[in-house]
Length: 318
Ligand code: NAD
Image 1 (cartoon, rainbow, N blue to C red):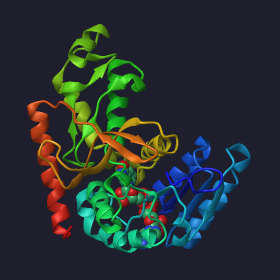
Image 2 (image 1 turned 60 degrees about the horizontal axis):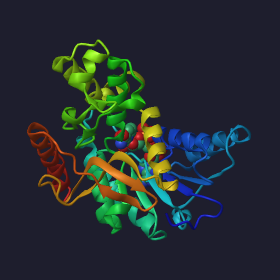
Image 3 (image 1 turned 90 degrees about the horizontal axis):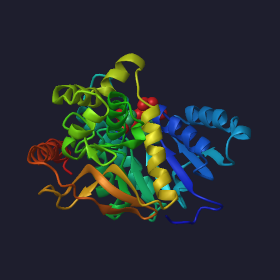
Image 4 (image 1 turned 135 degrees about the horizontal axis):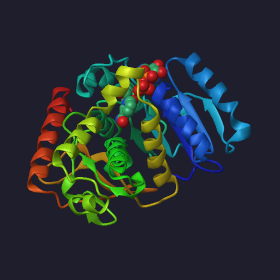
């Protein structure tokens, strides 16, 4: 962290849509920032959201929340990119690439004109391609450009496994890696509860160990975004809480392990692309990329996911 913000962390959110503002609300009620600045091309929308958020202040942790300009990025510790060009619900995340890349080409240089020491946190889809774009456009070191990635998919998997096994999802250790999108990969070989692999844990909790059931459960994870969007138009709560956990890990210098998208240099021969794997995250950003001992089929699926993302990045000339 830059540590330059007066009185505590300063967080700038670019994009006052469903995700950006739900995240701002979550930041407020978790007391994680002393300053929150919201920037949007739709200034009225940003103003309305800021007014509404500020009216909750007597019941939350003290924070200064305001609308702003890119010059307000100056001493920000974290700048979150949550913009969108206006997507159709049924478009796959990767189909959104060209439009949102155009936005990032305007936004990232506007941020870096005023800030060279903060952490960029990308949430705009297609997440991995946009994270890579932000890395290239900013020139920031790779440890300071992060995409929310599969932290959300991992949370969905832990929640659903918790339901299946009847244990608190916080005690389920399982990861989704690769693309935040259709080619993502569940790491079943390492999934465990209390250090016990699922195959051995299922009999303990008297639930059948069924690879078919587990696969159905993963399909629910993979399709969750589409299923939620079909019903309510957008997803916002799960992702906002995921972003909150990422920010908490940074501002509290936690060394927390989270699955986020970041530049991979050589991860099972995957290199020069942003994808999610578990990392150690602290005040400096990504401290360590954790190399999971994956099973053979998981390595193959992960490499396939990288090809899918790379193809889109290449098509944008990245
Ligand atoms: P939204 O349409 O509600 O909000 C997007 C906001 O971006 C709007 O307020 C719009 O005015 C603003 N915007 C557009 N162009 C801008 C510009 N040039 N400068 C500043 N602001 C600009 O969208 P949303 O539901 O909040 O989603 C935001 C993004 O997050 C989307 O790309 C969505 O796909 C993505 N998303 C990612 C995850 C994840 O897990 N990574 C989860 C949910 C949504």
